[in-house]
Image (cartoon, rainbow, N blue to C red; front, side, top):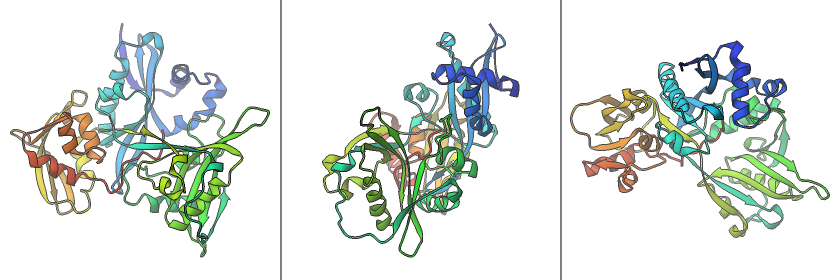
Amino acid sequence: MATEIRAARPDELDRMHFVVAYSFTTDRTAEGREGMRHIEEMAAPFVLLEDGEIVACLRVFDFRMLVNGVPVPMGGVSSVACLPEYRRKGYVGMLLRHTLEEMREAGQPLSGLYTPHPALYRKYGWMVAASNLRYSFNPKQVTPYSSAPVRGRAARVTEEDQPLVEQVFRRYSERRTGPLVRSERWWKDAFFRRIYDDKRGLSDVAVWREGDGEATGYVCYETDRGPPPFRLSKVWLREFVALTGDAYQGLLRYMLSHDLTEEIFWFGPHDDPLAYAVDDSYQLKREYMDNMMLRVVDMESAVTARPPALGAPEGALSLGISDAAAPWNQGTWRIESSGGTLGARKADGAADLLMEAATFAAVYDGFMKASDAVRSGLAEAQNGSAALLADRIFAPEYLPRGTDFF
């Protein structure tokens, strides 16, 4: 039994589509593949062959993720699939290790992914490093707390208005951690449409304009009609972005005006003020949800690419990383904050802090404090002040949150 891992050839994409579609119980037909062709054009395909036949695969998007507002190249791992009769052979692990090398060669020091199986990917160095709250509410039972009139109005727009929406998103993302730098193709195929919707239906988008006409917010949402006879619907609020109080209040009222629906749900930021913007927070159901998983592919490049936290002190610590899946990260690293930049280089001697690569991924973007990693037994501190210094160096200005499912 011989195995091979490599980039997929164009004539193998039909077979790759079959493996993905069979694994995820989606449309395996030629029409189904046609509906997913945009993904083939955006993400690099990799396949694992057993005795010459493709039995497992994945894709890697070429992204840039913001860390405290600074873009860092990231490989977005997606469509990880293995036919059921070939599972439990370690093939997915082999693919992941191979693509770590590919991402490093491609200059992608970070990797992100979304999965309902975090334990699998944690074994290979990815870690949950962002969160959401799932809000759900009946618009008939929710009223804004403030009754003051808002200045401006909401108006629905089309994909031709993408530059206007993008301008708001860029302002919103300026100092955040987790959002992607969206390409024009991404706006078309993954914002105005759901990326894995093979029907390619358009989402609804409404922009908030202030009294002077300036665009300061938007909502992106989809409505799903229920079965007869009454056909009550549900609204999925995909994005809710507001730069001002008027935009927040105006867009909230706009969504609540959709009162023929029985439920609105939204995977919103963990620190969003929605519960305080309504008169009765008990009418909002809130459920904590893990979000994007993150991995540091290349320690030196990843650390030097991101800025230290705003107001971080100057100083250095030595960090010991264990990383079986990416052995080039293994060892002791001197992390230094100086002159508003971060540096990382291999060092000799004992480390102040010891942790696995997966744990460091969550420390890297500020989702987990190094001191909490120590307190929970996920890291060891040989020097008590080192964890506190790491807390301050890697602190985010906003809680990390992946805004783009892929």
